[in-house]
Length: 189
Image (cartoon, rainbow, N blue to C red):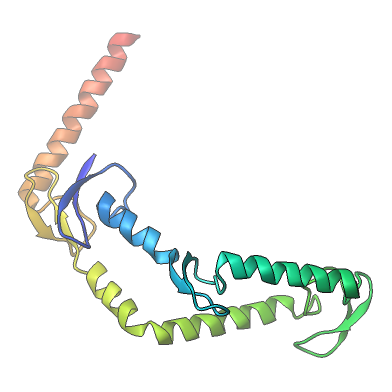
């Protein structure tokens, strides 16, 4: 267990996890739950509902849209049967359809998907520039709690102690623990 200072609220807390634990349990639950599940507005009926980042429709409208899609599929059949040929939307060459949602030939698929992901990332970053830059400055504050004396200190490097004196004390403590373990292991033999 290590005492850390929450980067969000500034309260000290006991961190039981790995090195990258930087939020107290309260802030962590609030931050990570809120990062993906938020109130969304349905594009069809305008109702507010909790949903993930790409939830466009409330559960009722989503169910109705799925029913309509199923009816169209039963009426018209498959639009592109597997094994047929289609044109690549990236380069225009013909390819053999291997799945229902395939849009690109095997040569272009990775390139096209990467371009699309990059474009979505650029749009998101442009729309959320202010909050992203605020999060970066908050994470760089680097307030830690010394494991020896419990004092708050600014961490400019990866360290768990506030001063060279505390570092020496910590080293002495860890050496004593190691010697005690060694003695215990020798006595067990």
